[in-house]
Image 1 (tube, rainbow, N blue to C red):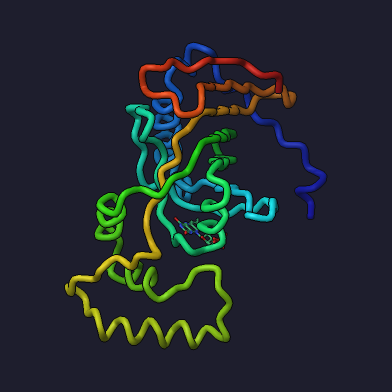
Image 2 (image 1 turned 90 degrees about the horizontal axis):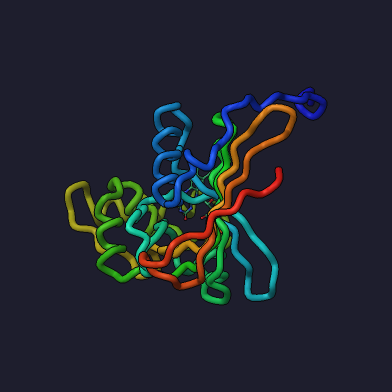
Length: 222
Ligand SMILES: Cc1cc2nc3c(=O)[nH]c(=O)nc-3n(C[C@H](O)[C@H](O)[C@H](O)COP(=O)(O)O)c2cc1C
């Protein structure tokens, strides 16, 4: 494990106050576009951290599927999942979350804190119909986060659903599957620089504040 001994320089691109601007949603959109342009695998992947009902933290990767840059109180960062999964159960107990975009290849990281709420059914339906056929069936077949006796059991469920819903057939969205919207109240943009003397710029606003409420911008020490 050579990497444990290495000390990689993070370059000097950084993040100036001018580049950061005053709108963190616009800056996040800009950085996702840069990750796409750099051909990063799943540039919209983010690590979602939640707190279980018993107080234990847990993290996993999900994909950002919608970003509303208007910044209204009810809008924000959307992802889709199984509402009955471990994360779904955690969110029912504690709706505050952390989302972390790990763009190591770009020497960039963004951490978002906010409140996650299930979206309405119409929004979830719209995400569901956009999924490929197989991914829609998988959403039905999987009781996400529950134990299963074997891979074969899952494959049999999938085979049954493929017969029930051939390609082109309407597939109803299962109630257990849908979207969440995270309304952000804190963003931290991190940009790597030489000598581990990095740039960190934080945007905060009151929890539940709407688009009219401006963000407070603060630079943090690296
Ligand atoms: C790149 C990547 C993207 C993923 N995207 C999603 C996603 O959008 N939604 C989802 O429910 N799980 C996604 N997963 C799987 C989750 O990380 C996780 O295994 C699953 O949601 C179950 O998590 P839980 O048991 O904590 O609820 C993704 C995993 C990876 C590695």
